[in-house]
Length: 382
Image (tube, rainbow, N blue to C red; front, side, top):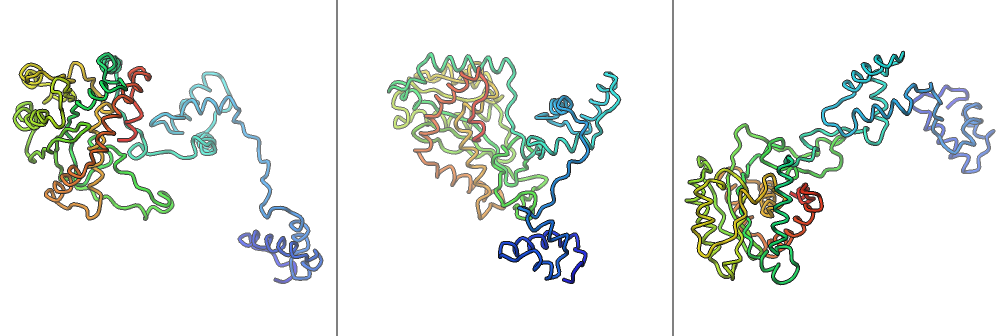
């Protein structure tokens, strides 16, 4: 480099680093200048601790602490609210207050981007935590159910409580799709997570999930207890889960399983759990469960078991495992391969895992009771 050569903007930091490196090696300023570096450049950066430009003070921002707080109140943690909407709201409010200056959208956007809570937005489909809506009636029903479970000794840590919990049969149905779509309500987005180096800067590293317009799906049904599981029921593609179908093809499997004395040594302690799906709450189905089984069993169904309470039914975790298994290589490519994968996953469920699921029931009830009938943290694990 010749003396007094103008340093290009793109090379400035490289030159500054070179000057500071020469200083660390013991080279004097005059010797560095003789090497061809600008005198003013050497004098400026020879004794600096950093090679970066100092941040200028700039123009004083018109955003006061009060305005920043109002922006935060309008946008932070709210779904579907953008900087454009905030700008419109503040414009109306400031006009009513008689203020001369109104923050523009660009000003609001710059401020939001500079905060820790607003520097990144998350798309609903991928990042929004989904939970079933709980009305006040739902919460009241959940509180009553928790009280019922507590009063009847299911939460007791002693032998009697463990015995009662081991006689609970958790049942449900689930739809398993070959090419699940992320934004459908039939699949939890937890099953669609992927870990890669950097989702945004290295987008090509994210695996592609091919989605068909009419994806192959299989409806399954089953039940689990602390000691084992029922036979898995695979429904045919054209089957509609009605009360009649439930009584003819699904309920007999559960009733046969409940007669297994290895699983349920004391028939009078059996508790049958099902949610309030139309096929379950059919009056003929409830009549069979409550009046035609001898000896009688305890039935947790519609009327006692609360709606929107999938976090109470531990079999939901089994469905989550089965849905995740669809993505294991080699991935199924047709309905028969999908059924084979589902069956192998179901058959491979470990008894110790089923026992741990059943024994998590008291913690779920206790957490919901402490939360005034609200959801439990177990929803995050589905």
